[in-house]
Structure formats: structure tokens, C-alpha cells
Length: 341
Image 1 (cartoon, rainbow, N blue to C red):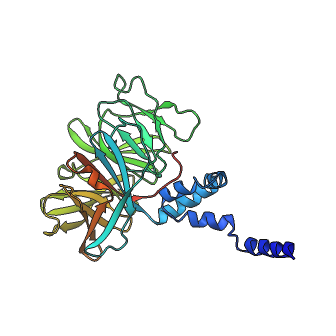
Image 2 (image 1 turned 180 degrees about the vertical axis):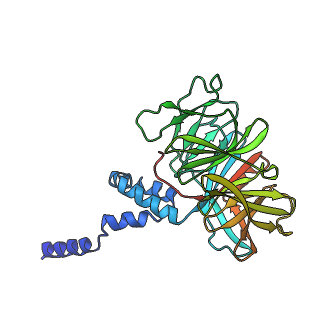
Image 3 (image 1 turned 90 degrees about the vertical axis):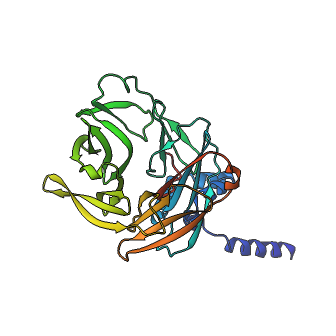
């Protein structure tokens, strides 16, 4: 009789077991730092959550639910925080940014480029060290140094292919010498970045498939704009005192042509002292004030409805930064990834 009870009990418990494939699907929809905790449950789940299938599934779901990423430099330390990105934000809504509690080695280069495939590129002017890191996992890799990086042959450019067992620089085609500026954006396999050439501003276009360069001139009033992805084309948000103008780079046959798309008049909610963060995939322009306080706020401008919405935010644990020198950078449409490369 006792054996029969145990047998029935075993069958009941087995009938309520959730299939591992269904659990993987559930785990792929939670924040990345939660997945990191799940990996610590057992060797079984560490193995399961490290599968290529799960990584791709997690990446797919992350792209559908983009987040805000905040890089915060506190003295010489670099911290990352994240929050869900507001969808169709309403005025005076709120968000809370939580920290990716992963330890990064000290003295990392603290200038952060916009994230790509879940990882960020860290660099600092005057230092040869370049680092790629994943804010979720805390993994990082230092790129190999190139001897003539600051030496002769400055018009020769180099390419490093990631995801290979051995990272090695190789030369690509030569182009006219130019001085690259901070910031860049990748759109449909093309890298766009601002640069100087013979004291004039331009946009450099580097096609990864052909590894060829093209150069597009900038009008004088466009020299200091924010690069964005505007419906698959390169866009440039240019700030004036009480106005933001959107320029779009369109292809006219084999040539590139700038056209002015919209002009946004800034309301008193933003004021004149603000930074243009960029444009979301939903087509909303995002602003932040120059002086960051906690609670901080972002302002979303909806192009179609011609409306502004203020989103109030709080950085969880920011009390520890009080009376310390901090530098905050905000990134839009961040998609988490469980892989470094």
C-alpha cells in the first residue's frame, strides 16, 4: 500500500513538470540580469542558458523590447544602468533604471560608443587601449594593439573581424586622410561617422561588404548634429537655439543628397540647455537636460502627433554618488545580448 502511494505521488509530480523548451522561452523574455541569476541555479541551467539556441531566442525577444542604457562614469569607475524604454510615453510618466551589477576591471577607457549587438566599445582619446564589453554579463575583451596606429600611413585604414578565434588587424582600402570625430552609427551594413578634411566637415560612409569609403559634404549649419537612423536612411538632428532640424541623407541615383525633413520648435519644458539623445525606432526624438539630477527626466517628441511628453526617471542606488563627480550618457533602443561577440 505504501509503495502504491509513493508511485502515485511520483506520477503526479512528473505530470506537473514544465518542459525545458517552454522554460527557455519564458527565460528569454526576462531582463538579462535575471538570466544571469538563473544560470547560478545549477550546472544544468548554466548549460541550458548557454546554448546557442537560447542566445538567439533571447536576442530576438530583446530586439522586440528595446531598453534605455545609461553609462555612468563615477570618478574613474564605469557603471551601467538600464530600464525598459517607454513605448508611446505620456506626460509625467516614470521609469526606474537599475544597475547591471557586474564587476568591470578598473581603469577601463570611459568614453562609450553607442551599443551594437548588445555590446559597447570603450575608448579614450590619447590611449591606444580599446575595449569591447557586454554590460549584462560583465565580459570584456581588449582589442589587439596596432603598432602604426598613430604613425605613418594615416590614410590606410584597418579592419578587425570579431567572432574569430584570433583577433588580428588587416589593412583595407586606402582613402583620403581625414580626422574622425567621436560618435558613429551603423545602418544596413554601412558605418557613418563625422570627420574633418582640409578644415571642412563631412560624413564618411564605410561599406562593410565592399570595404570602400565614400564622403558626403555637410552644410555649414549641419557640422555639429546627432547622427540617427531615420527609416533606414542616415538622419542628422541639428540643434539651434529654440529649434531642432532633421536632415535626411537620400540617394539620388548614384549620389547622396541632403533634404530637410522637419523642424521642431522647442517648448519651455525643455528650455534651451538640452542634449539631443537621438531618435527611437518608433520615430520619437529624445532630449535630456544638460545638468543631470536625480530624479532626472527625459523629454520625448512625437513627430506624427507634434506632442511633447516628459518622462521622470530615477537611478536606483544613486544615493551613493552624492557629492561625487559623475558623467551620464544615455543610449536608445538598447537590445540585451547574452554573448560578448
